[in-house]
Length: 263
Image (cartoon, rainbow, N blue to C red):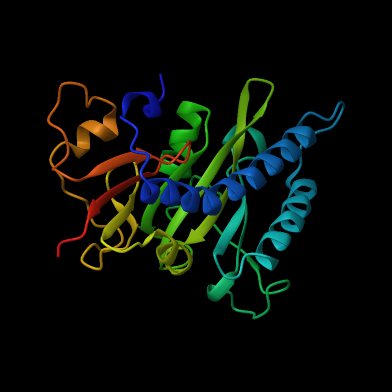
């Protein structure tokens, strides 16, 4: 049973418009990640061939460059992260957008340099992080954040990841980092409507973007009954406050909470 079957539908025009707006942002990104995952899986499945980062990295860099070219600054990082049993502790990951040291969408990207020796005191086990852990456990797409990405960009980020397999073996994840500031600029004007406040939250109830200026990105949306909705346990539990509506945004892991704005 999916979350969509557990939560009552609220098909008012504002909710429908909000769902469409959120889908227009995230569905194309996941579609590209699915294409990337397919290419990596084909690479890994080549007969009589040993996977090598010297071969895989150029493939990923070519895909990432195209992503930065058409992202209008929204994409700030992208690539492939290897499972330790595939290419070792390796990130084929590039940074760009407003944080790039070199300007220009097509050339202004740089490879993320990381410590890949697990014996080094600066080494960080990325398999313990949410953007890896959840796709590994579920086998599905996932959105992590919003969080401040101190490793790469020092700004609020959403990380979209998708697991990659060789046969039934997880060999890594493909992912794209999106700037929350850029998403907010493009999404909030399409969410707003007279007399309606719309907030997009993640599966933990933290604000991604909101038309309510009092709700900051990353803040926890505190509403009676919201945790039950997010966990799929709303049946028999207290409902949301009067006038509030809740709707999952497809398979993004995000949800919309809408409420008439105070007069």
